Image 1 (tube, rainbow, N blue to C red):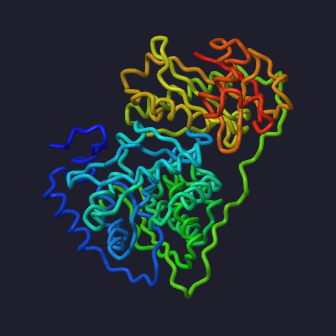
Image 2: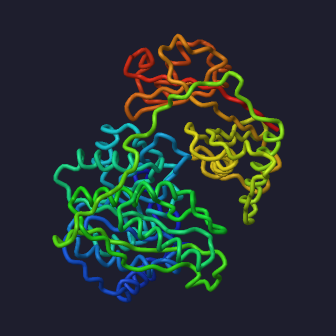
Image 3: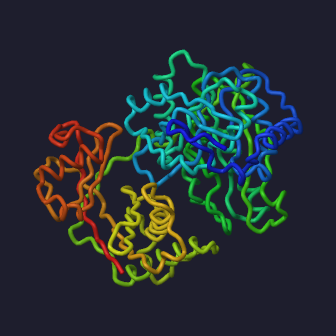
Length: 493
């Protein structure tokens, strides 16, 4: 029996991803460690990357990285699991505020003091226990850490929006808050998702080359499969944010060597090589003999919004019908466990234009999920597909949509016009403009539909600043706060 303790995060995947019986688990962990090849790494190790699938699939690939833990001197290991990408605009990271994480081997303490310090310093690092409650990408590594470093603490992290500057911001904040702690970064990531085995090997080799070269900018561009034309590929690296943090942290500490420890894919175990997941483990170290590791961040800052709004902004009727059909079919395929693919018709070139989108789901008149993005980085059809999946299955406020719910869903899509930087709040037109405020790392957004609930302009802006952006109620009056205006073309079934 596991302890029922509100200060302890209970195991979510014991008995599925790894053994639930503590005796069997101890033997399993030790077997993987004993069978792992010894890797000769000269010098200090600052970070590792290892996969997070079930032990039967990926533990043999992760084991060389685990085995290195016994020779690394650290007090706290920052375990960075899955990231949310475009589903978490302007969020750097998501922490959990439990004091302990539990596995069948017992409890492991969370470095809550470090987490709290980082949150205070960088408000775009937030806490959401629900995000961590069922996650496996941190938990999967804990039995090995408990076996090899029983006295260390952990800081469990889910990464937010995957941009190089957010990886840098996380490292900046960690360095400012770590005190005299000895830190290890543990990036938890699988590699290519769902191409054929041969394509996975090629994709993973390309990704590993980018990691070794420190090209984080290119890794972030490839995060959602951009620029990679391989059938079935969803992403080449599912936790790019954590790997980016490992790279920058290692650069800051003088790393000069990136060692690939082991690679494989799920087809090597399951035998089905038609759709696989790639796995790889890596160590970042300083030998004192190599060329200093350098990370390419690409654009130094997130681009500002300087476009103008278009009062005539709209979406054609044919495109509306195509997108609503796409959303329903995407959700239905996932809920029923069926494969999904989509090719935009040549007759609708509007679908290829970059756009920012919110997808909202209602069931019986009540909100069932809503996720969106504010920056037009992807083609309209692709971002609608992303947000449809996220609203149905990744909105942390709700459970995942089930197959028997799909017919009862009501779908609304809101396409945002390009944003305009307002010269003053006087430019805001109630019931017409959506508004985004930004001050430093803090930002928040209200769609124009919110005017129906908060018709008073001062209250609208006050709630936007206080409840959505984490700023003072009157921050919108400050010259330090940027105000962006946009319009929305919304349509529904």
